[in-house]
Amino acid sequence: MQNNKPWLSKLMFLLMVLLFVICQAVLAASSPTEDISKIGAGARPMGMGKAFVAVADDINSLFLNPAGLGEATKFQFTSMYTSLFEGDLNYVVFAASNPFAFGSLGFGFISTGTGQIPSPTASSITYFDYYDRLFILSLATKEPVLLGNDLLRAGINLKYFSKGFSDAANSHGAGVDADLGIKLTFKNGISLAANAQNFLGSGMVWNTGAVDDIPAVLKIGMSGFILDRLLLLAADCDIPLSSNMPLPLHAGLEYRMNQYLTMRAGLEQVLSASSSVSTNATAGIGLCLSSFRFDYSYHPYRENGISAAHFISFTVL
Image: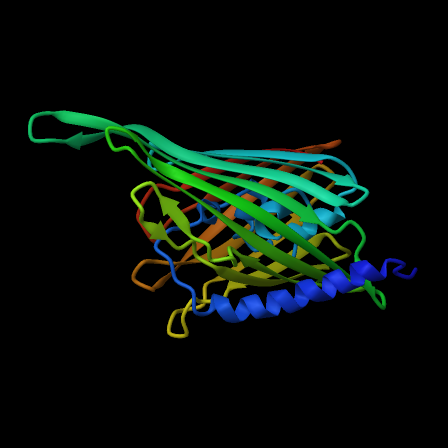
């Protein structure tokens, strides 16, 4: 099989060059505003310690490496829900993708927020609401570039951030950014991948005139199968934003017990505000029936002392 689309090969080469240039800029970036997707998207990746950059083989790829969307051969949909901070903060995720002649197109949405937050004044107490939303439009190449017997895929996300405070504390901000991901799969099933998240550096603009940077992160990873493809192993790392910061790592595994049941486990390192690293052990389970999959994951948060979260996803594959 040969690649009969020379323009696609040129595009893939351009994307790889662009990714290399982006990596140099990532090391110098800094920001006080977090990307909401950092919490996590998809109970399957969460159960694997978020080690998913090089796995990227289903709709969850939209959030962690858009290049993986190109592997889908039909419509996919997923949703996820959890409640954080003892139920005070709801966290909701939706995503859908579909292959077309020009490539795989996807849409993702993440939302969190809470209401009726008290704000004491000199004479009384007023209340305000908080919201944080992310909209993602994804495009991945449908046909991979062939490098001998190896497959190279690429994908890009266009992202719109919206967050703010309403009612008594009326303040809101918005920003646009992008992700660029690539995935190289070898004949033996091993995959190498990278995803440059929020590489535009355009920032979030508030109605007050303030501008916050959106953090740029370079994620690189590796995955592969063993035991007759029953056990999937994956490892990722996040390139630190400065040379004196620790390197957060992610490691996970997924074992397919039969056609219906899958078990998962992982370790996720998180970088705190004090630049120290804490490690969270995660676990999960997947139940699959025909084209429907139910995923559950358990994720503690040792770095901030809040209660562990239980993530639930429903996916159509």
